[in-house]
Image 1 (cartoon, rainbow, N blue to C red):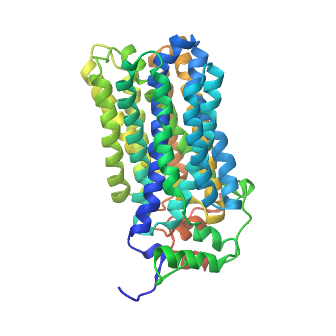
Image 2: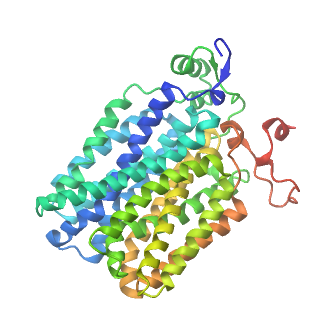
Image 3: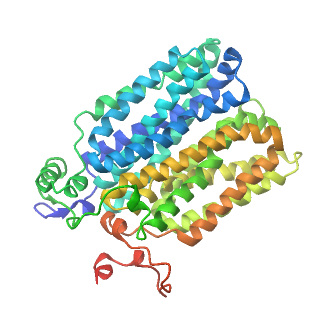
Length: 461
């Protein structure tokens, strides 16, 4: 209504929200594209550089290891220095490192280039999530944050298409494949110039007038700051492990880990896995599963809107664990049933991956948000890097089916962790979600839920 004063949390989605979303979505497309290309590129790099299995694993996982470092460092730095600078610098580094891959002549040079890529991607991952969460209205926050996974999946699948088309360019085609990520990265960098600082972060630095000016300029003169002004807590990783935040910190790290370990291990080496399972008929099965990744990501948006965060996560983990366990014990002569189970696994895994963009952003207050997202991302990328590195070693030593069984056990662990600790943050404002107190474990559980379930005025009393 014209002239009515609104809070940031209560706004409809406007042009500025779409711009910030597009800039962060572009980053996630680039992330998916960079990580998706390496599996195809390795089919050419391995014979040309005579890579050992260990070097194959290191090159495949190098960007993920970089993401671990970048998420930790830039998440912490963002909570101290602000979001906007890292929002720009990260993509300048991504553009440069992408282009430098073209000139790599040794496995070590390629490893270093992709490690730098990962460091920059890790910084952008936590800052981008924090920026979009802090500008997003409450009603649409889950949809916008959950859409990260969709765009990431489009980038990952686009890499498969581009890489497959480039294979015919000759033995040096991998150089063009890997360097091609500089194109979307440069476009994102250019369009990010002029992005304002997060007003929520400015408020917590005591820079109220700057925050108010940004809100009025970009969201409208009738929009006011949300009620975040109070006594800010000290920002830093130590606070994440304080009594108040420990449970949600551990939960966000572990549920994220339990999703991405099977995801990266299986889909980085999908062609090899399908061949080992005798499911590779040309490119048919691989194309089907990549298409299901996209469909599943789109379904995940609807699930994020319709279902509770907690219920969606727990049920997805249970379905994933069951389907992967059945794949591990299924006789090889039931090919179509195995493809069907793989399809269900792919759909659900892609759908629930939407929550990795939602839960960490909703679980921490503004002064700890980027650090919390960064720590959860760092743990997820370190574990996914390890699983990517170890999968070929495990398959060679133990066989594919025992390896799949271990990945199923990780998914079951994710279900147990979620049943024990997953909060429900869907209906809370960003301020209330970040400030909600996980109950003291020494206190008796309240009969009607936790303080996380209560509106902010009731928690304050």
